[in-house]
Length: 362
Image (cartoon, rainbow, N blue to C red):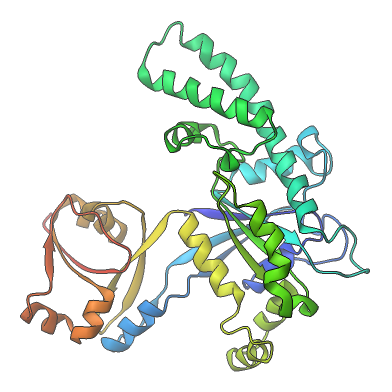
């Protein structure tokens, strides 16, 4: 299961954000309240699944899940071992995507700066410097290897490492650079910190809720350049964490009092799922409606294998309809009678939101 790691300076709100997701991390107003990373698995809210379950009167609903990791706070000099140093960087290396938690809230009782751009600059600098150290050693070894191995794959890898070295030497993280998608893919085996998908959680205070766009504008502008696209999610983490401790009705009442709708946590979970390249297909019936997670771009047999390896091994075909079309028609049998169920074979690339039934023989 792919994991998204919360990364930021001490007291940025990472542990409180983890708590808002339902975890039990220690949140305190001093550095390193979290030393070992906390890991939490969270259901991915999906109204499509709920509506399908209602359509088929499902006895059980099973949501897709996303995994989050609360990583200890970073400090300047981490790439040289300051703070938790290499231990911190190793934890980031192990996750598949990064959520930068940047502090914008003001609180004199909490140590540290409240300028989110200062937070961003420190974090990005440390990650880029750590990657630069890694790439400098790797590119020389691979250049030497090319004397014995003339394969196109190794040549592409060296080209990618050279491109990464050029960007990182200028202090530019790979996800901000103009490095091609092909080169970024070639860099994946090296587990570089800045070659991961990124989203940004901007932690604001209650007194900033009325000015969200104004507070978020500089951070969104910072990610507005070429190669730097990242979703910025402003949220009052403390308020969301408090709401998470309440019963559902009381939670919604609190969120409504601040005109927050369903709350930012739902959007965070859905965004994390999306940037990690995860997509969803559904199965639905009286016994169960379930959201199944698949890799974006996967073909029908691979998706069948998500349910059971026998389904993939003996794959024959898939009956398929998009979720909203099924809702409009009213039932699987009505969709069949109307000729709306598509028969898809081994080359079909499953689309997010497909409802599938697989036929197989083993």
